[in-house]
Length: 248
Image (cartoon, rainbow, N blue to C red; front, side, top):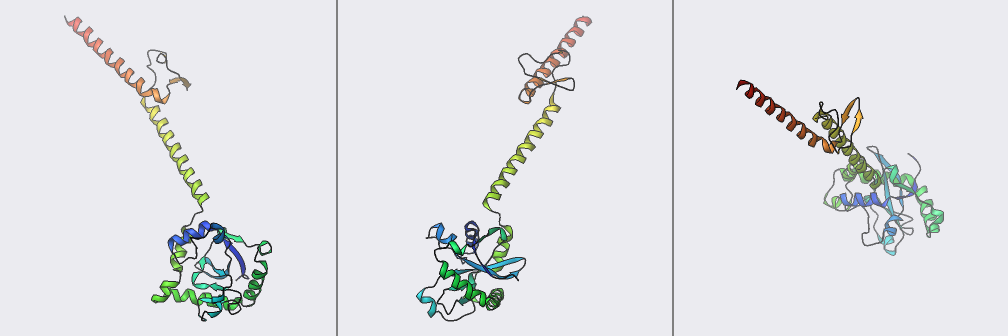
């Protein structure tokens, strides 16, 4: 497994997972910048072709008083914050954003956190695997505070970035338009041509020549068909009249 690194995670993806499982860490009352800048550490484990990353929290006075447990890794006994392994999430590579520590206002603190985590990376990864396995057969406490990792894995497999969804919708619309146009063209070819005995298109119509035949625009084909039918009916009526006159 690769060495651990600090990352940011695309906020659209975080919001998507949070809608699936509200234990995914997202402070909805905070501005987007607050959630966008949260550091994640990983890769902590890889399972079912998914790589897991866990959110970091900067140190608070209360962190040092938290009891040791499997789902929280206290960085330097909480002096440098903690890692919420119960809130770790599967993240595809496309949603990872490199964390540029050198330009972060918390640069010194982040460097100290990273050095400590790097030195204890195997311990962190072992805890992450244990947390994942505990969630597979949870009790009520675990269900309450652990993310549903398997559910999130399914969601991760189905995730499509907003820009990809927009392009997907555009492609669907274009495909539907092309299909409709093709059906209209085929329908137009089967309806009619200009009356063969007239030798001309109907007066006032715009026409194009195709393979030696006069082809009417699609919007006027139905009208031409009705006129052709009327001409045909008139011819039949005339023939019947002449036939009756001959019998008389």
